[in-house]
Length: 573
Ligand code: 6R9
Image 1 (spheres, rainbow, N blue to C red):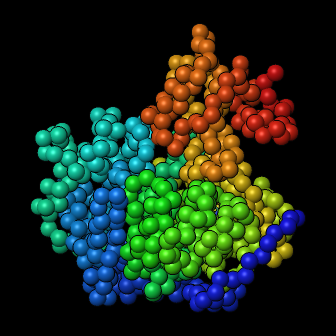
Image 2: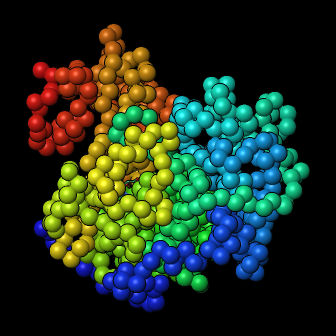
């Protein structure tokens, strides 16, 4: 079907030396044996990821968080993290917050973000991480849908939380604010942490009890809450070893923000589960800053994303040369890797980049290239041992090799979402073709079983690796008085994968101008989130619609790309 290069396996020892052999002998029960819950019967991921290193393994002095930004450096050991998360669990308990309550995190990358995340989970509550760039409405939607009782935030972020508009919300815990700035319902994080005891026995749960709730976008409607349970630790641990190939002497850096699934599974909990520090770099992206971070910590295994790699590549091959890097394994997620980027990495780092495909809903890495196997450049290789993948047609029938279809995974792996929050119908949609979880992505499998990603088969947009629902952006745009109709698509972009492009029809009495365009971009940026704001806006007299009045995004997309428009029989006039 295509021409591709084949890259030989990475040199050195790997946790999995031969994919086929490993799959033959693999059982999830064996992975579960790595956890103390297997012998004690007591489950809480915060124990397995944190306390256990102190109580059972003598690793209390090892770093659990290595945080740095332009101003400061902070190291938190496993013993500190055990104590600090216990304190935070006590803070919540004292407020009357109990098992199963939703407690949100709206905090830029920082040690406090991770400490409070750990404390929430230790207390048996459900953590709700929110990406720091969300604005008022995005925050409100998520707090309201989940009926959150508390949120942890910072002095800088708190103005975006409208407590009065969220009836369930009782407590706002604020980091880094002066007492005099606090509203009556606001609590000083520093004050309550100073007063709290550092003794707390994790709330013991079953592996199916919920751990975190992460909102994610689809092509229609508001974002949905994807609920994950403590069992995800089994999937996190397994993939930290097999796809991330993290070994005893490795230093692992995942650059993802803890407000997204990659951050939750691989910047926060995954490293802890294998006894490693999570490395968090605060501040804005720059190529120099990232290379310095790689050098400073001696990172050997690096997990990042195509947009970041493309931005680094754009800084030039020379930019890398002044740094002494120790990289031996690089992984990538969130959007397809283009061959140029893989070749760039080979050239400048002498290391291949390995695809790892997964989703908020799948919890952990699903389809990956592994260091011990050859890479057909452009393919994602095969599912992790313990997971079965297939390409299915729209009836759920498994398709033969070389046919394009729905990328599907056999349900039941540890880490698969447990629920869509208060929306069983939406959850069931993913599983309509039992036993398959249908991802919403298109792919085909070649004769060797390699999987080739072909794109989403719905309107979900991946921009700079972040998942944006067109409906949210459209809804925001039509709130502006100048906008009568809006249709939003992803427009391919060399660096960001896609940019958000909006097509609008103006309300009567409005005329188009550059200024209005800027105003609309700002309107979405400040109302919803910067990453969801359209970078391009095009005005049309009217937008293509179905007879029932739905905007036909696929027509806008085809027109934008100069492709055939396809079946128009449902279109209005
Ligand atoms: C982890 C994450 C999920 C969607 C997914 C797919 C795209 C993820 C990819 C990839 C090509 C990869 N995606 N990994 N596309 N190659 N290696 O990104 O989760 O934000 O839920 O997005 O991202 O389209 O369906 P999430």
